[in-house]
Amino acid sequence: MTNTKTWVVDPMHSDVLFKIKHLVISTVTGSFKKFEGKITSEIEGFNNAKINFEIDVNSIDTNQDQRDEHLKSGDFFEANLYPKITFESTAFVKTEGSDYKLNGNLTMKGVTKPISLNVEYGGSEDNGHGVIKHGFEVTGIVNRKEFGMTWNKLTDSGGLGLGEDIKLIANIQVAELVETAVEPAA
Image (tube, rainbow, N blue to C red; front, side, top):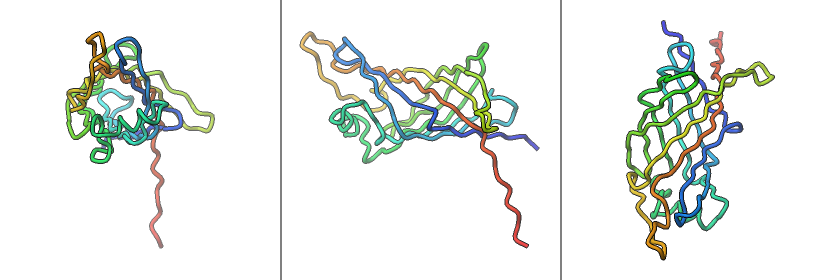
């Protein structure tokens, strides 16, 4: 019998951010406010764990309502047809010290592509209520054009109005999912 453990993302102590170049000269930062995920491992620790993550596209927030609506439109995420961004890991391997490499399949706007992300394990701590929490920082780059998000316009100097590479930064805190045993009715 395997000793499977499952951890779930604590959305109150996690965030999913992205950064993209605008007009070649500056960076716009945004976030997704609604997401969920879990990590499942059959061994102690997280090496080779399975990770599933889902983001609600309609929760996008760049601190500018008009831009958020444009990002939800067909020019970008097409949220009415593709309301979720999903990630399913294919490998989670410790590389050195507290660093891991996370490989998996990312699905956005109906397109699934393999991606590779860097993960730094921040450690574990009791939250003061007897629950052990684990922290991770996940970073990587995704090219939006590979997922069918090709909208752009040129600046007056001929540069791209919007960068093609999206920097991802997710600060994730997880807690072990504890199954409650239910006694059968007598």
